[in-house]
Length: 461
Image 1 (spheres, one colour):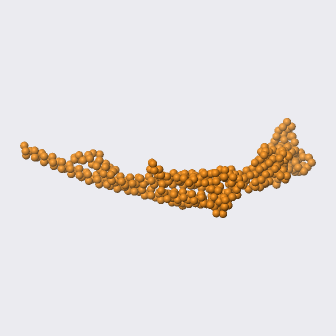
Image 2 (cartoon, rainbow, N blue to C red):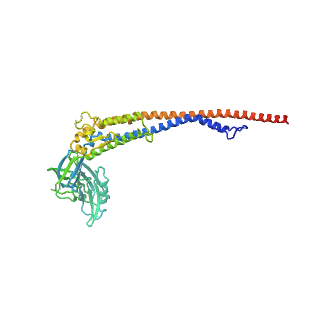
Image 3 (spheres, rainbow, N blue to C red):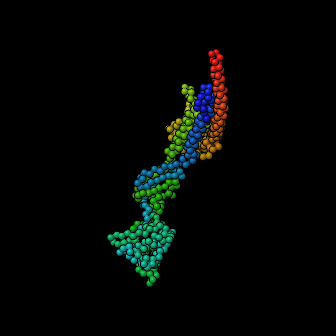
């Protein structure tokens, strides 16, 4: 605002100070009211934001409990993990299994006879190669019939399922080595040289291998073999060292063959996963309840109230939580249809939940199916809680509705503040004009008084 920085023109009247004080006095009641309301609105907006975030955190714990997988988790314990490791999915049926690892899977490796070097010519023609259900051919032409050229032709051949050709140079000479695409007997390699003399030269048949033949130019360095286990007396094979179909829901990975050595595998319900999910639910609930207690508290000693003390939305949320905790689940087992019967109780003073660990562990050990029914599914406690909480935390929920109303009020207060400043500018301008005119008038009176005094003095002399 513009301000006068000098006293009155001639009267000695402090126009600037008078105007400033009058404007401040007129502004203060409205400005203080707006500021106080703005502070309260922003405080409540902040409180609602924090409350909504905590409700969302609590909802995350409910999502886990709505899934049956949390209650059907399984563990697989192995008596000798140096021989086999096991893991179990929720589909696994608890039980005990006995097995022995008879043999491991291996990947076939074939080696040719010795050649002088990788550049030694082998022969021309066509090399037909098969492995499993794949068949492909490489054509060997003159000038490209060296051991290294044949290696490259195999590795880059169209249709090669993954057979790798390398050259190994030993004290005996250079050998072409073929490694199958994967382990297991089904990945065994067959090579057949097709030559048409006299056009084809050399002896490409030195690379032949037929597993049915009595003898072959190519020799087996590592066989194409399946892994084999005896499981409860049944012989089971796998092209790899992993058995994922032997027992439904159980994956076995064999690490070492030890024929005849018995290994015990125990598949059990995994109470730890379930207990962790329930503990997270309790912690999430208590965090929300603690926040509500803080937001709605009032300290009579300090006369300090929480940010949402007396707020209807928060009071209704607190009442809803209490009802949900104490309500029994329709259709559940009569002696396990509430959280209290599971070992979870609510403290009367502050509403926080406490867990009777002994009671809960006993129930989880003997009544897992009933615990599953209590929490999971579309009609379980977790779903009921989630639906109720969604009414508070969603974009159309009551917290957002109240927050939207407060944001609208904050916008209105900002407009009121702006309007007040405009009005005070006009008031200041009016006061300044009035006091300036008064100052001029007083200055005129002072001049007249001085003139009259001088005239009277002359008359009396």
